[in-house]
Length: 320
Length: 303
Image (tube, rainbow over all chains, first blue to last red; front, top):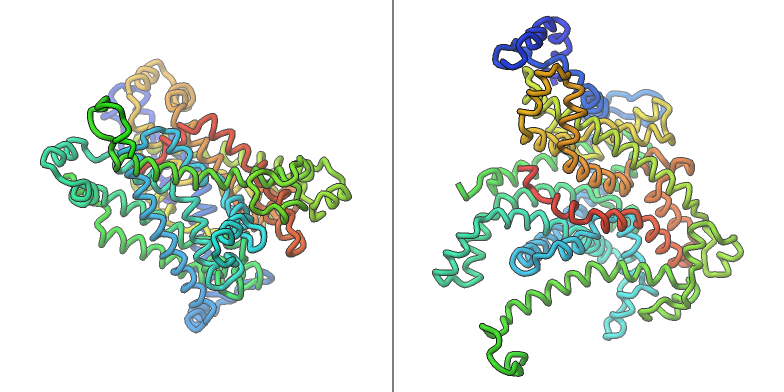
């Protein structure tokens, strides 16, 4: 932050140094310490506007609002940590956290295992770009569209899934309409949407494993299982950790699918944390409370990323 | 079984069961991925009133173009209701226009301004360059919901709610990812052409437009593609600031269309026709540039 705000001053103060470059264009080492600062400022100017106006200021303002009571009309009133103490005792908040965690566990658990399997298949067997493309398709289609499609296919009365289930003698299931099934169903829908994409990320990691390691293992007569656990997994770990960080953080912010299908219901069964924030802010006009909730979500996500990187040592490769 | 029926040892090794099993799994995965889209098409080509009695029929139930006509506004309300529609309105062409404008403006701005910034972060030398870049990158960690509330208040205070400007502004200037992505490519470009141009007296602006941008055409095209798809699919922000019909985009329009229908009497074929047409640009882009998209995904750029 400070670096950013200091620079315009520097630029106007010492811009004279820039002329040195024009005299000796080939010898860049001879240019002043400021280098291309003036022209650089011109080039980053739009991005800085975007950064300051839509990331920096909102971040500071969001933290400030979390300590206020603010119902969009009038001015925010400072109330200290009252929002946070209220949240701590708020049953709906804990319910939302529980629901979100359940979603994340189901979504990430299935998605990672399936994607890892698909990535191995892409790497060993199905090398065609066409197949990779087909598997990626759901990820390119809007969340809203995917949600509506599955809302139709999983409909209690007319949905094809329930129809097929009744053919084989299974009872019909109210996938989106029952408290126990709502979250697993939403988790499944997003596993379907993201598995190909996640598989491609892991696949990219698999490709970076040197082939000669597999050849050696093959010569030594190692079984495929042994090769997987002794070569593939350890070398894939840094990529897997990155994939987990990215997908877990995305998973915590599930909203579109819930908003389109269950809207948080039935009762509170699928009111995930982002849904709760949305309802507090735009349903009840309680922007202070909603801001405090999003600060908490922000902190949780930062912790999740930190813990994953730290304990799974995602930034160290086993290759070196 | 297959091995035993082979006439002679024409193959060097017996059929590998593990390989067959692997291909079966691949086929299942592709089928699970593609079949729902076919079901979408089948439903869209059905008459809504015939769906109930043909729930398990794989072919369109009472084949009809009615759902597409309904969505595209080619049917009167009476015809629509007679056809099993719910009578709920979907101003499809308007939403389509809004989606095109929204996705195009934000993609153009975001990629262009990010390319400018990426140029400054890679080809120019100035004090604090890497620190500023690192600060930019930290914003990747900020969850969108966190900035969405204050951004909403700002757009509201500026009187830009329900305007295309209000919808586009937060996406217009940059994303850390776009800057990061392009910086990688700019860094790997050779300096020689650039220095030769500089000796000829070319200014940075000309170098940027005439040397750097054309040389990075491929990664820029990939980024444009990815950004456009992302913006086309954007739901949360347009939901917050673009509720008004005049700026409503397709994603929001479809969810409104669904929630407007009377409970229990959803116009499924209309809804599926709508989703299909809304996803059509993505399908077309995918058919044309799928390979580019597929090959662009991976951590090679991020690590």
